[in-house]
Amino acid sequence: MKEKTKIAVFASGNGSNFEAIAQACAQGRLEAEVVLCVCDHPGAYVTLRAKRLNITVLELKPKDFISKKEYEEEILQQLHKLNVQLICLAGYMRIIGPTLLSPYEGRILNIHPSLLPAFPGVDAIGQALNYGVKVFGVTVHFVDSTLDGGKIIAQAAIPYEGNDRGEIEEMIHAQEHALYINAINRVIGNGHC
Ligand code: GRF
Image (cartoon, rainbow, N blue to C red; front, side, top):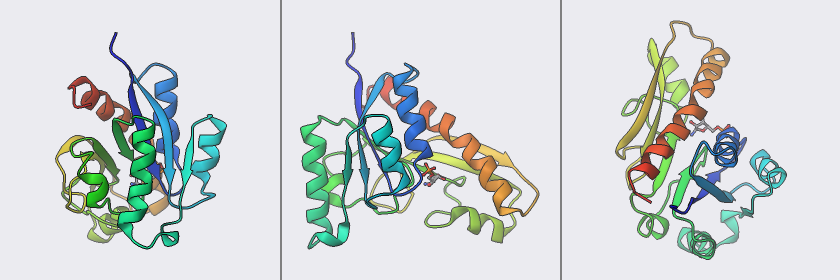
């Protein structure tokens, strides 16, 4: 039997996607295991979720390191120690640097709340609202050295004609979890990791 893929989820805040991925693993909907939660905001809600689920948490303050390279080297050490094969970014508010990107090339995924390539970067939902779009969406993509520009794995379109931020945020978040799980399944199934 194929061994379960070991996943690390990187998150900075709430962590609903982290929890959805961890639950999907626990319930056998993903042939994978979340072995680590990496958080750059010690005490963020995602760390409580991880502790509740008995998942190891690595809480680091980037400011405590002299450079991004050192910060990422510390993370890399933990990833290697736990044999992490796949990294899933889920609301991780940092650009991944070459220290992590190079050893995990093609094995880092991200979820972004827009139909990429439209509205990369911060506050994608706000950008889309300002633009007056009528079809919002969510994208799961591979991470490369560009800003939200890696190859797309899965997308969901969300038609919405209103301009209520709370309402569209809710609609987007409602799609994210299933889409992310579906995308991870595809990547694992394709033998990427
Ligand atoms: C999601 O909207 C995701 O698309 C974006 O950050 C948000 C994270 O939400 N990258 P949560 O922390 O998983 O609840």
